[in-house]
Image (cartoon, rainbow, N blue to C red; front, side):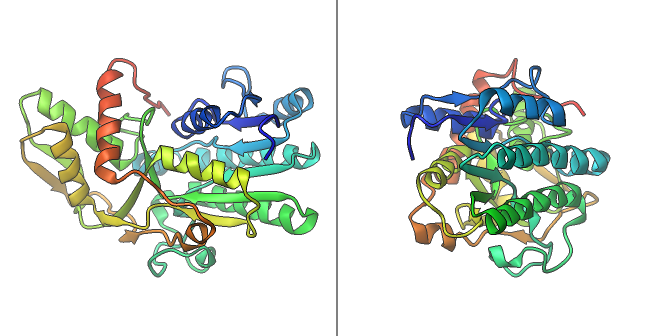
Length: 316
């Protein structure tokens, strides 16, 4: 990969986009372009076309999406479906029309069926029904995966989809109504500690198994995909290691230093019983994650403490 090629990072302002930008700059990529959300609405077909006309990127990394946890998905199903399709369709179609050399589409492990055999293999896509609590987001991402696959098959272009497991890290969303489980726990345990080690109430039973990956590891996977010609269109990206949510809670509680009780609200949904990625395809090509869960949580909590007054909150 020529490091002078013009790279457009869509979603550069989010947790994933910032990690990718930082990793690229450290590797010597110095021809990066992006547009702030106030300058370019990726849902706007004409605006995205004009941006591509003007910037003429050689490579596009799609880290842009409307994201959120179970509550956000349940309250705003239409937005999670439609806005994500608008964003990715505009980026994919304009990349094809402007002869972009390589396109990297970032999705989510939620594209796989709710009751898939574990670990999740890329071949399990579209073999059964989705998890209802995030099906709208998942459906949008599946259309993006298939669009990239169709372009690869029909036009022979290097359009690759990377499906990361649950991500966390600096610049995560810590809003309790819209965030995912790990950053929400960090905030809950921290606020309970500050208030005198009050009890913490968490959703569900704590029994579901989940896998988590520090966002810098995904950034390294993106660079791996940039710098190598990958033979297939779809790859899982993760650690291949999962744990019960109640164990995750204990790790976060220990890192934060909270000494109160943990209560579980079993009236709230658990979601998919288990979700861990089969990462053998990408591992077989030479990429592996580096950061273990406890170290990643420590890094994320340190960032949270430093940015308590201005951390990201998403209002829907």
